[in-house]
Length: 162
Length: 157
Image (tube, rainbow over all chains, first blue to last red; front, side, top):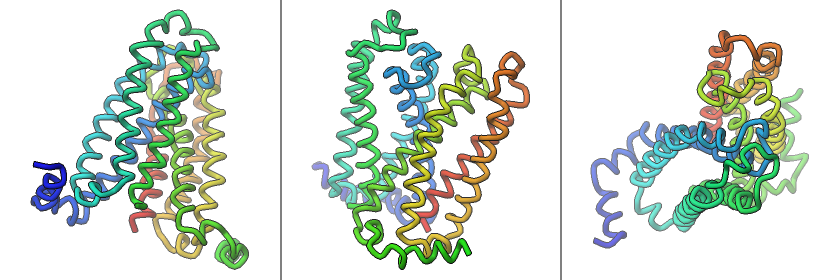
């Protein structure tokens, strides 16, 4: 089944119709999605700002990262599930929406960026944990991460505009 | 008086870009979401600390001091982008219940933050158990949640 056919099939299911047409599901999903962005975004942004040495310098980098981690994951799972349900409410609309695909691409890039950071620069965190200045290798990924998340906000908001 | 001035914005600013071009609104709104992430994000981290959820080894006052500049930066972005979004269609916004509620919650949340939370994060309280600061932080979270939800609802009505 092609992706387009899948979207056509999905949009005709009773579940998708219910998500789309019942008065409550969509606003509730959107509400949870955006409130969770606040939770997730705060941890991601403040975590990045800590790696850059711009915020919470009195807290060791690894402590910020380790303590935020369960909350980031919880928020991410919530974002992922509500995001999929929002997309399932009107698959044909999102399938044809360029901003939807750009948002998803930026999200994947942010994920890859995080993976590179944790597999690379973060492994030596013990040596720069308390320092004001973070090694260039680590700050680069934090900068890219911040830029990607800002891009994601713009692209995500633009989904509704296109 | 204030309402008259606000409602007169479209006449006072006939060339206001946000009222003229459709594409300005989502861009400014995206900046508004960035500012919101910074402001509410930093507040949320402080509230979570006061609830004893994380960063427990960190003195509350130290964390509050570290976060305050980000709270102020986020607030500055919101105080610029928010009124500008409003200036695009003041009469419409003033009629929307969710908008009025958001303004009330926003005022309450700010007053609460700079009085109660400010006091809760004072260095003198660092060595004492969290005690009353837990419910105080919970109320702060609740107030900011109301700001976010009513803000979202503006676009939904």
